[in-house]
Image 1 (spheres, rainbow, N blue to C red):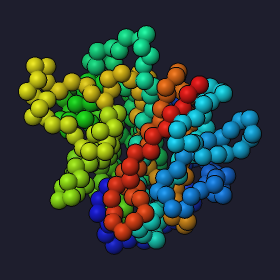
Image 2: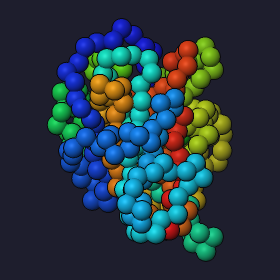
Image 3: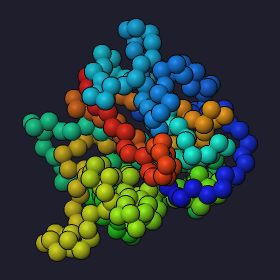
Length: 292
């Protein structure tokens, strides 16, 4: 997320779309905005819709969550632009997982693994650094949370190198290839807004909404900074998907997720999204429960 600058003209793409499936692969599809066009609320920055197999219709996922009758959920995430008329690019973070049951044992953070996936999107390949065009791997919850909850540098080990390959550069709303998904630049320190792109990857809602935990306080503890956001969670997965808005100033991204048990959730963070209003600020995390 960067401050709004003069809009730059772009070649128009009809829609940004990727299927996030258990396999982690993405493929281009037809314009997915059409099925949910009549359901959209034009006054909010982001919405989530689901396909109801019983009624054979699309509907908005309620704020209170959704109870699924089947094993897989087909979703459409919609992000809407309010501040500039020209099409722009961006990236979203999709985090899924579930809260563990009381009967389960929560593994130690160093042993717990988080799945990371960034599918190849050839149309955006011109804007990336040294990272590979795609990534599919796992890192420990300890390394993931140190990096995204506290803002520590990545460790000099396999997990740390995996984080470097997972994160990527992308075209910001300025129209330049000048944004990184793991940027630690604060949104607006003069307004006490300590959020950053990297903090949006946290599984701790307080970090997403308020910025990193204190490294100083973590260093005072006997064990140092331990995993926070991942405590009490299982089957965690994180996807990065780049997008481009269309002529209607929106982008629709199709997602296919398979809940792994009770208390399953999906959380989406739009790194360039901003709610309607007089001031450009980062959109809040969209979070929904999906139970079965």
